[in-house]
Length: 178
Image (cartoon, rainbow, N blue to C red; front, side):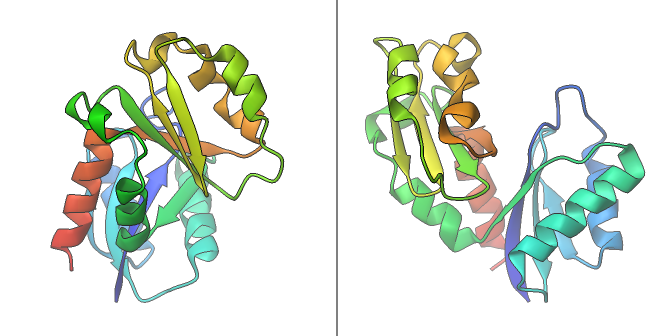
């Protein structure tokens, strides 16, 4: 049995349902020891299956069948999440954990337009693309960030963002599962 982390894009906005229903849905799919973190689509579970793309498709299909929308699901291992945390290029921003966001990308960007993001960047903002993780330090908040709103378009891939506090808490939850 392996531990996995499912980051479900878009829950909490227009699409929402109680996380206890997500737990039940994941258990119906055969996953074990399912736990969620806050109301924005974060789940940690154990599974015998190791085919991550298949796990992502199964969860998306089950949500679509039950709730009528097909969110993008990105699955990480605890090791992948720990590596993303360790690669944080802005460790000084960790003191203000809601100002630092990691966007986990569905795939490696082929032709990222970082110049477009640079043109949108406020003087206080900093960003870095490292593999399938886009880091954004936005001290004024992402709600007012033009750059944040354009990440997916500029990178050419879908992703789902979590703030530093959430990322660290999700990893802690996953690590408790062993």
